[in-house]
Image (cartoon, rainbow, N blue to C red; front, side, top):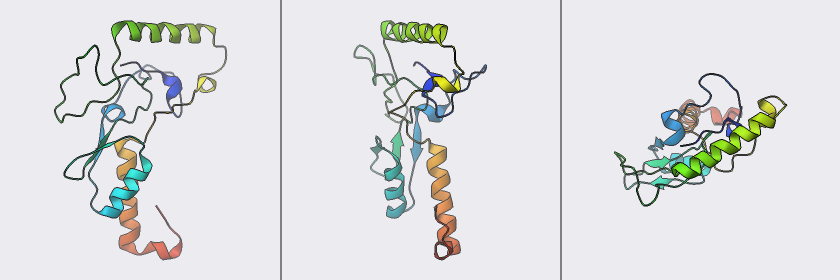
Length: 149
């Protein structure tokens, strides 16, 4: 996997900036209702829907999109989900060299280095938070007072 902090919605540089959280690679959400499923799917572009209704996807928050595997090998996954984040050694080194050239020449701030991330999707935490808030609003009958998730 190759991390490019420029792809993050709020690029910052610190000792953990090049790290990857589990939900940056693999997010999942099991909706409680058809309405909740529709709302979650509306937030996502690419996802797998499992037979039990669970949604599984790769948020690609700050990851350079790759393939599901390399040279015919697809890494084993406990739930058979294969995110498109793998690169061959040659491809990864080429991307890292290009990143080094960029940062060697960049004179602005880290925030100014931000580039569009066409593959970014909300993480599991974001989808769950919106679903929980929608349940709260519905349970309390707050839709009538103009509070929407």
